[in-house]
Length: 215
Image 1 (spheres, rainbow, N blue to C red):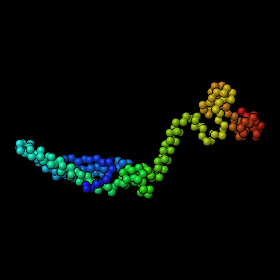
Image 2 (image 1 turned 180 degrees about the vertical axis):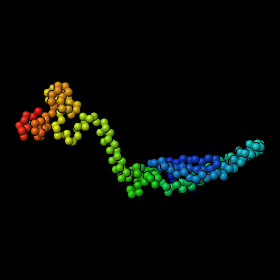
Image 3 (image 1 turned 60 degrees about the vertical axis):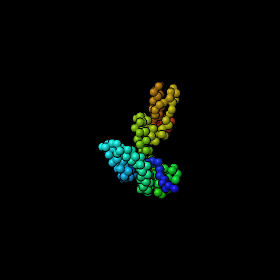
Image 4 (image 1 turned 120 degrees about the horizontal axis):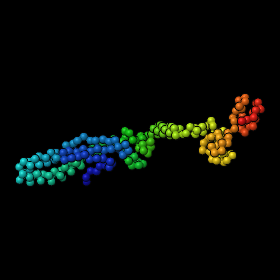
């Protein structure tokens, strides 16, 4: 019974008539390994016969055709042997994830602590750093996109009692405005007494310190 050998499908056969070479790649990061070129003896013999055929023709041409048929079967056997050797050479560099079945490189894409590939079990430190960076970028773009009047909607302004519509004409208010853009009605009561500077309570009609009428 022929010997069997197992490996992933993510490889490239670089073999030619002159020899054998293979590339194996990680399913996750695509980083891989290329085996050393192994010369094919059958390819060398075929080249000699083809040269003889081109120089002399006739009998040598017949020998070349026969040699090519022999070479084809021998080359396939040599190719299978070279591939098996290549699999054994790179096999220690890869491991198959039991969850997603991907073949990944041990060096970059295998989470040894979890026994899974990093696609299934990412490094938490890396993910946290990426999440923080992503959030920071979102906040920068959000702040940059805000109009100047919208920046007044920060936490220090939330207690002002922002209105959604004018109390006089009921026009909708698009911003945290002081006066209605439709009728000009005053939307916010003064927060400090214009006479003594004391802080006024919401809806106060007179200053609690000096009695001056609230503007």
